[in-house]
View: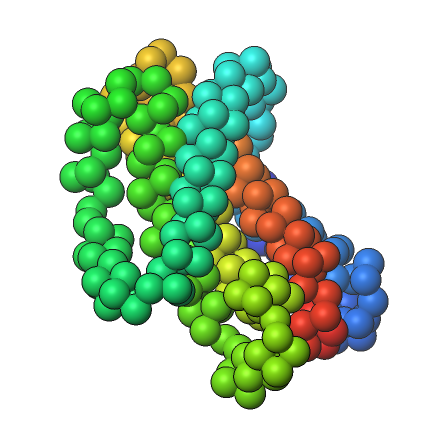
Length: 281
């Protein structure tokens, strides 16, 4: 119970200190990093104190210290699962799905028939439940990472396609007419006007697709996988009541997802630095 009281006191003191920092130094760069980091530390300390103070079973909720210890013991195992699920399944599917969506959006943009015929079909396919599609794709493409990449392609393709099609329509008639007065070809108009205008829409779709790719790859492993992978490890560790290992896998997935999203946001700032939304930051 002493540890719980210490955790509550630390959480209260750190929260007050954090509120003071956020109000006084909200525009400082170091404060923008330190405030969320301290907030995360307070949550971990409170979590540790609650588990110890109420003697919660590790099967229900392991303490952060137990998760960290299990993480340190399983670095080789976690790295193997990370490589199988993230680097092979999720990343390969993400690149294939997003690349295909961008090319398809450009083709759709030139065809009124595809705009009216393919987009409704795309919305229908995007609404299909992943738990129903994943077993079918595993049967088609096998139990290794290729079937997980196929699931990821299906999950990321339509969000990126819809955003890219909307982005290509972002220019108005006046801008396109101006390009025609310069005798610009379709290729010149596409690369010098419409694709730059579509970049903010495209990156919205790419950022949404980062989380969908991780979810798709992990969920697909629940329906068939070789003896490695984050989804496979979570399902087997739950059966063995090894909850610290489950939380370690969850932590790796969360860190990978945050890093992936942050990388895309950084790339967006580099590519769309001219956009008003970036200049205002």
